Length: 398
Image (cartoon, rainbow, N blue to C red; front, top):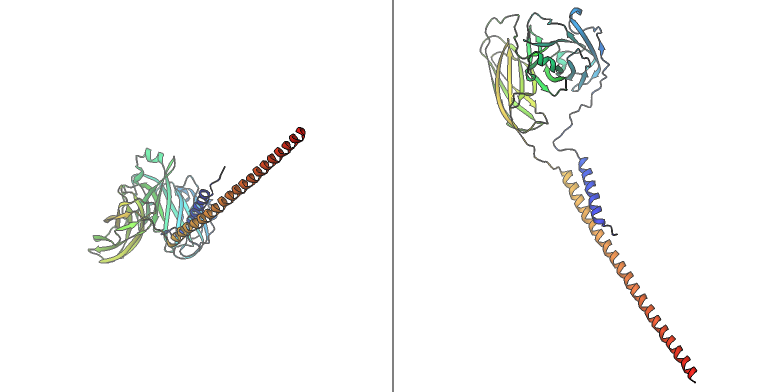
């Protein structure tokens, strides 16, 4: 049974090429992992005392608590602090820092009731308070709170899954934070929200009834305009928008500005919060990163300006397009090298095959020559035998 060498060589080369391509860096994909993170997350401690930071909750209003410790976090790095406590809705706190921090303690407390005198929403699942020590809100470039809400609570309170929000208490009022719904499990729906700082929080329905304790003495009117600099983007890229804020009257004030990207179903895909000071007019650039797993299509960039319990909004749309297949120079060189190698091996294979065939032909020719000699010897033997027999016959006759 003859074995074909060429197909085996081609298959081996194909697998070598696949392995080569798999180890090449993917074009357009850069790792964003921080390499300068030096942290130690200590085990969560239930209901300990914490020194420093913000005002503590009255013990009578506290259900349970958890404390997390960070030994060290370098500038520009981040840490994810996980909470495994069924009585605390927050499951993870992700802190991105712009200033180096060390010896940080963060305490999360679930509360029995609203610790303020102001109602927040028609349906509230849980009140929480987050206090900290050895870290200021200004040390963080971004703070993300991931939390869960039981499906049973949503059903019994007639609250839709997309109608849940996280509220933060600051400036004597409850402020709704843009909340993103994500996948959950059989019993819970998961959400995430970006907060400008640690404070008192409430998880509830989106029908907010925020009230300001200190009324605004004169009416402040705003207008907001958005101009998208980026009209078409690839998934994973950034969208830039130029924002202009106009204030009709009053002195300089600080307003909450939320930048959001939404899909056609009005789901928030990503968001950012910032505080902007304005007297009469101001402009700035807002930039949001598109999720890498987003599908091509039309999406909207929302700007929400919140002040004094009122909201002003501007919207513009952009398009996410399919990223073309990019082949880098190392990939091209690798493919060309593989093709050249295949041709060289094929040439060597043909030469070896030719030599093998010549050897076979030589053996056949040698065998024919031997057979011819044997036949001649046999014929000579027969002739000699015949002569001997004839000689014997003559002697008998004589």
